[in-house]
Image (cartoon, rainbow, N blue to C red; front, top):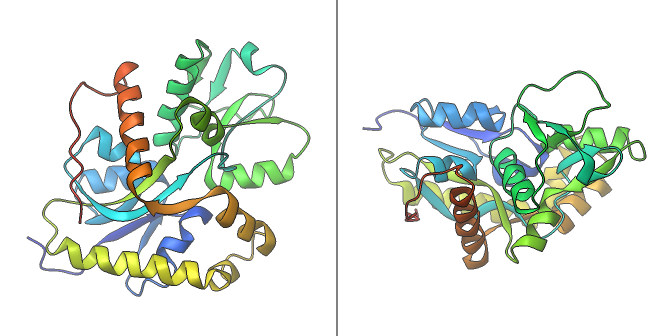
Length: 254
């Protein structure tokens, strides 16, 4: 039963700003792994979280029409490395990564590459590492020539000719009237995309022109048939590589 103010959470990265900017009530902003745990434990009612959270526990209703996706290079989900990628023996994970860590495992397995995946990153900047979100953007801007960048969005597009879905709005099953909440979130997304410069103005850390390029060229905020096919393709690949149990996924929408 939901007899209180809606508890809503959202990933705290630049890529999510067009989906949450201007929301009038309180929002919990945090990293994907934290929000996934809070949503799973019932500490949040609705949250923009890693798409893998739905695949791992498909009890949620998906807010239809909205996602954070890419249809090619995403820029902010990358492995930073030196040398030859095929020679890497170890890749360290961003501890906040959920979907991206499992996407990396699938891509490596499909290429028959077997580097050790470490979930605890070291402080050494010499190590190959998976970077996501704002951390990836900052690192790339600080080290434009020191590293090569293996873009997971680009690699996915080469493997499966569908968009890749990184994050979805998910509502817990006990949430009352999820359709009304979904309508609000879709309207907010539409308003923000129409007035994207207002969204960008609130993030002084990043250059406005970079933000426009990032939103225009690297990200998609829809969740249509192509994105749904991409999500199902990712689920099948995770099952193939034993990251998920074998089962059918029913997408329940609000």
